[in-house]
Image (tube, rainbow, N blue to C red; front, side, top):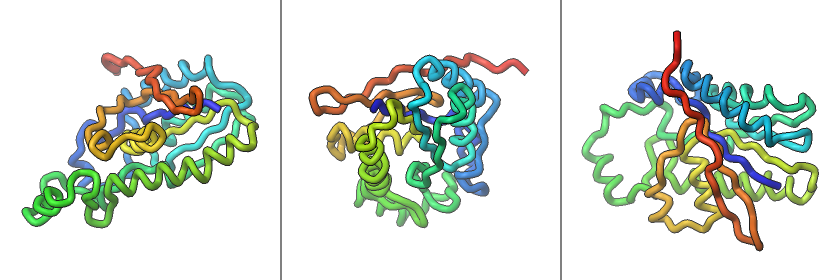
Length: 211
């Protein structure tokens, strides 16, 4: 079974991250550009997916909107599930980038980027645990049933990178130095001789959006 890790299209807080100070992360919608990215990703995936595909999606608004644009290109019989395990790295109920008191800066320096846990939120290590839990409780069960050829996971940058970190046995240093994951991009996880590998196979190109 091939696994396709897809990041949501551009969202409102990707354009203005300071919106997070007063709106919960789960409520941000796609921008017009983000919707176009999702549609292009759907067109790309249409040539790959079939009736033996299955979708698992983060319940956040932007991921649902992205997944819907892709799901519209596949047979209606394809299963579609939401999973809170796939949600974004939680930086707190609300997160104000302008409010970083000295004591939190000291904690971050002491703990390091991987282990620092945000107030009312998660550490990167927590996201890693969610990624491993999703693989062990969902992906392995699907693989054992052998009913699906393609698993589509529509999620967020940090979760996608932690899935890769778990499956590819990255070090903590490697996981805290991950490269940006483009909006709407598709990363294929495959297995050769018992070893997982990851390959980015699609990035939607949207130069500008015409009003």
